[in-house]
Amino acid sequence: MSPSPKTKVAPELEFGNAWEYAAAPESVKVEIADKYGMFINGAFVAPKSRRYMDSINPANEELLSKIAVANEDDVDRAVAAAKAAFPKWKKLKASERAKYLFRIARRLQERAREFSVLETLDGGKPIKESRDVDIPEAAKHFFYHAGWADKLDYAFPGRKGRPLGVCAQIIPWNFPLLMAAWKIAPALACGNTVVLKPAETTSLTALRLAEIFEEVGLPPGVVNIITGAGETGAALVAHKDVQKVAFTGSTPVGKAIAKQCAGSGKRLTLELGGKSPNIIFEDASLDQAVDGIVQGIFFNQGHVCCAGSRLFVQEGVMQEVLAKLEVRIQSLRVGDPMDKNTDLGAINSLGQLATIKRYIEAGDAEGATRHQSSAKLPKRGYYLPPTWFTGVQPSHTIAREEIFGPVLSVMSFRTPEEAISRANNTPYGLAAGIWTDKGSKIFDIASRLKAGVVWCNTYNRFDAASPFGGFKQSGFGREGGRQGLLSYLELV
Ligand code: NAP
Ligand code: MG
Image (cartoon, rainbow, N blue to C red; front, top):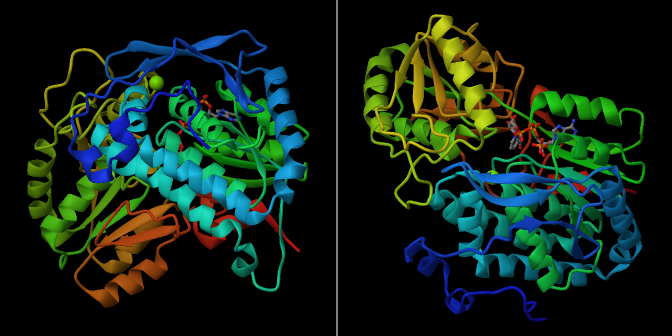
């Protein structure tokens, strides 16, 4: 199997290693076509709708490309391709399915630099994050699930796992390639076929992943990628030949999808929003804690479902924490995401910028005290300085609702009991962080926080082997690990 001739790969990328990529300047030129069709039945095709939407680089507001907008006919074509491919893919020897996943992972690693640059151009995230997190983690998910493909009998002893059929997978714009990998890899490992819809503002890396599917000779129809906005997603969810819907996105859209699927017999998993608490106790190593808090809220401009957006500080160390927080936040570099030293890049879209600004105004209006970094922002592009509020009351909008931007709400607590009740006082339950030097406290508090992941003296750590998912309005179902396989199998 060799790369298809139309895909150009720089020679040094074929034989380089991860360290070499990291050391090289991020000046690699990535070819972007003027226009992209959809990937259906193993080929790029023009949309029947004949409609295209603009894909913008949020760092400078320039047009990157035009992307197809799939209508119901296009959705139908993609689902039909996935349905037709399912019987053969399901019957393929599991070790053969694994080989495809291994090859995809390997090609992703080999083309990592190109994918990193494209991810940053399309979505505005700092290149160091695309390069060190998004792309390598996406490759890891394919490697990890390649390992499961022929070992499913061991995952659930005494039971047989059967694939479900056509999986409709809808993903958000904050980790575009990584979310595609989280969805596609387990579905394929379990023998399902896929129709994936990336988010409107960040479709380019998913479409480039389709090039890898071509390169590795993935049988036509096993993965189809259709682009478009919310209506395309809704049409996909509604399709009668879809057996499983996997959605990652906001809680309101997740609720709408749950209603749409109710009574249809479709299997559903929802990975939704969050308002995660990060709790600093007096006995914590404060420098380490402050570093973790900053990373926990400002990583990827705060466009992170599990962002530690509510900070609870024990009263005795509040002043010290605030002083350290200010110094640390003022040192963050905000600006051109392609600069390897940039800590915060561009906000993903103009719409999201407006949403975040509305929340900041609500913070001001409801009486919290706003602090912002004095970082100088570029004149063009969608940027915001890292922002934190003190004097926040639990009833304030900025303490209750997901902002999905670089905005931290700081609150205090006196006792561990109070920390737990305040942390759990939210309709969400995705993640939480605890900072303390006392091991017994970690076990006690972690077991009483209602959150899918609880990090202790660290934050935003992920592993393909570890299940991820929420409680309450953060959704249901798990992705990753053995538990994640359950979302794509029927156990008999
Ligand atoms: P979103 O607005 O809910 O959109 C998510 C995806 O659903 C996009 O592809 C979107 O298309 C599509 N969509 C919109 N309306 C739809 C409908 N009625 N039916 C079907 N699909 C529809 O969320 P987002 O703004 O992209 O992402 C941010 C949210 O994702 C945050 O709430 C964040 O917490 C959550 N998130 C959760 C996790 C997790 O694992 N729990 C991970 C990452 C993000 P268009 O965007 O093209 O309109
Ligand atoms: Mg874009």
